[in-house]
Image (tube, rainbow, N blue to C red):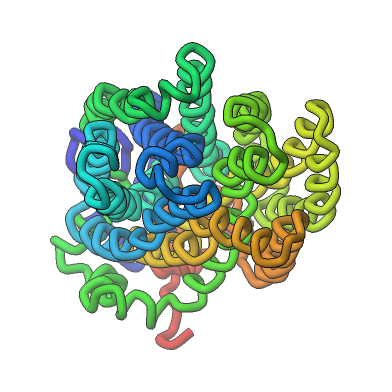
Length: 508
C-alpha cells in the first residue's frame, strides 16, 4: 500500500495477499491513532452538521407551516410541515443508490465530501427563500424542492459515514468508535433545538414567523464550511484502498467481490438481499423510535398536549443531551457483550416502555413529560448506537457503501422520516392520542425478531477485509494464535485460507 496511507499493512503485502500461505502480520491493518482520530473526527463533524439541519426543521415545524401556508388551518399547516419533512426521506433512497454506487467505485472520502457540500448548500438556501406573502404558492413549492435536494444528498451521507468509520476502526473497538457518529447526530439535534429555543425566547413567536425562522438555516452556511474543511482532510479508508489496490493488480478474488458493484444497485440487491432485508427491518424499528423522539415529540407536545412551541422544544433538550452522551457507552458495551444483545435491549425496552411513556406525557406536568421522554430515549440509546457498527458488517468491502445506501435509505424513507407524519395522521384519524405508542411497539416487535437472524459481528474483521488492530503487538499475537481464534472467519477474509495455511477445496 502507498506510504501516504497511515494505516499500515505490509509493504508489498497486497501483491502476495492471495498467495497460498498462512495469515501473516503484514496482512493485518495496524491503525495509527492520529489518523484514526482525524478520520473519526472529520466524519462526525459532517454527521453532526447533517442532523443539525434535520433537527432545525423538525423543531420549527409549527412555525414553518404558518410561514409557508399562512391561510391554512393549523392542522393543515402542521401536516404540510411534517409532510415536507417526510419528502426529504422519500428522496433519500435515490441519493443512497447513486452515492453508494459512486462510493464503491471512486472511494468513500470523495463521495462524502460531495454529499456534505450539497447538504449544507441546500439548508443554507432554505434560509434565503421568500415566504408565502412574497411569492404565494411558489414559496412552499421551492421549500419542498430544497428539502428534496437535501434528502438526495443526505441519502449518501449516513451510509457513507458508517461505512467509512467502520472500515477505519480496529475490530475490537468498532462498536465504540462507530457509535460516536450517533453521538454527533443527537448533539446536532440538540444544538438545533438550543438555537431555535434561544430565538423563541429572545424574539417571540411573532418575530419567528416574520423573519427569524431564517436564522437557524443561515447558520448552516458557516457551519457547513467548517465541516467541509475537516471532511477534506481525511484520507481514504484503508480497507477500501486495499480493495482498489487488489483490483488494480488483477486479483481474481477481488474481481469476483466487485461483480455486484459492476452490475449496479440491482446486482448488489440480488447478491446481498438477505443482509439488505435484515438491515432495512432493523433501521425501520430503530429509526421509528428515534424520529418519534427527535422530530415528532416537539410537534406532539405542541399540537396534541397543548404545550406552547417553546416548551415543546425546551423539554426535549436535556433528554437529547443525556441520551447523546450515553450512546458511546452503549457502543462500548456492544464491543464487550455483542451487537445482538444490545439490539435486543433496544427493541425489548421499546415494547415495554412505549405505552407507559405516552401515558406519562399525557399527565401534562413537566416532571411526567420529562420522564415520558426519557422512557422513549432509553431504547433509542441502545438501538442507534449499534446500527453504525452492525449494519456495515453485513456486507463485503467492495459492495458495502452501495448495499448500505440501499438498505438504510429505503428503510428510513418508508419508516423513519415518515414516522412523524404517520403518527400524527394516526392520531388525527383515530382520535386516540396513544396511537404513536402502539405504532412503536409494533415496529419493535419486528425489530426484535430480525435481530435473531443477524450474525454477530463484534470484535470480528469486516467481511472482505483483513483484521484491523491498534498495535503491532496485537497483530503479532493475533497471527500467533490464529489457529485458536474463534473470531477469525476465513471464509470472509480476502485470503480464502484455512488456519493451517492450506487453501480450501473448491466449493467448500
